[in-house]
Image (tube, rainbow over all chains, first blue to last red; front, top):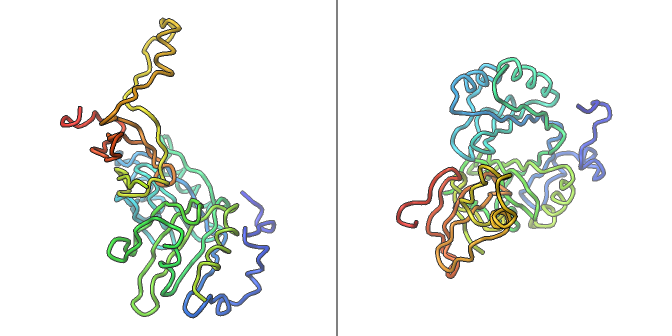
Length: 201
Length: 93
């Protein structure tokens, strides 16, 4: 775990913290913000074993999603993103990773599981506004049509040659889609600048 | 670019996948009992099928799971996709 006072977001050298959220508007209707330091834990275990699911439910208070590429829970509290048939990405509030790990380890003791703290491996970019999905379409082969890619769904894919997890949180008729992009730290700056470049002015 | 249907994630672009070569090659149960020729056969020799070919794929930029596919090497059509621990569908084999 990183000492929190030494913590630096991978986008720190872009000076984003000095920009107020309203100024981060790109073009007319796209709002792009980084959500750094969100707790992230990678969980692996066999969902066919009821005792495992029960233990995780007791530790997190949410059910793990069994349907591929879906998300359960709330981003503001605890959230579980489907990564594979036996793999999930759990997220929690900033600084909650130690508690998440402890709870999970306690509830899955002596089980065949892997619990890994990956808080500082990725950062999250939040895109909201009408053009958010059409910008992503410029660098991604995924079918993002609203009939196919619906709120609550996630996908691991390639965006601008970078491996990302895309999670569509909601689709507001007035504001448009709100989505989270989980990107590895070393690709974060590239992706941020690519998104700005791809956004309509 | 092919569209390959991952058994977990559904149809995705070929660039998300990694080809793993011929499927259903069993590791010899007694490797030490093999002659050099037999071992080389296991390690290196692969079929070069014209037509339906059973091969492994990994959804490396997605869910990172391995699966099997029956691909026609002439037309690139994918005739069947099945899980890694399954046998090829009867209509193909």
